[in-house]
Amino acid sequence: MALVLQSGIATTVATAVLLGGFGAFSLWNDSLASGAGTDIATGTLTLDSVTPGAWTIEQSDGVLAPGTAIDPASFKASPGDVLQYTASVQVTADGSDLLAELNVDPGSYAVATELASDVTVTLTKADGTSPDGIPITGADGTRNIDVKVTVAFNDTISGLTGQGLASAVSLSGLNFELNQVTTP
Image (cartoon, rainbow, N blue to C red; front, side, top):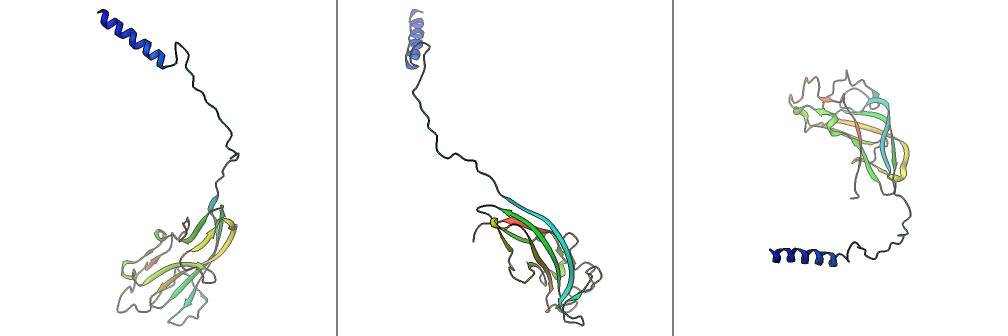
């Protein structure tokens, strides 16, 4: 029993010595300002508003002249028709190292299965440039971008493919999307 008691006392003394003595524990330390002296802010990337425009037919294999105003709710498309919707989209991009693209949200419209390979929906600037997404940079600030959404029916649709569809292209939920991207 005495051996166990002496072993316990020896362990306690050894621990106290390793910790710097009885009741005193300290290590030297120091600190110095880094010189960073600032806060880091975050930027902004938002779609602020859309000013609606109008629908027109831009290419026709029929009787309507390009530029003719149409009502998409009553218009019945045929092969070769290219319809365009114009709008002005206000975006805010504020960031030192920010790159984004404005596009049509592909999940916000639907093309009938029969025409899936024969109809395209794209977004470009109003002048027709930027067909693969309109680039936005952090230096743009808040600005309006005139855009056009193009719905093109391939002129090689043949036979009875896609005829008589009440909803060949559903655009009732059409949305624009603004996504941050990385450099190519």
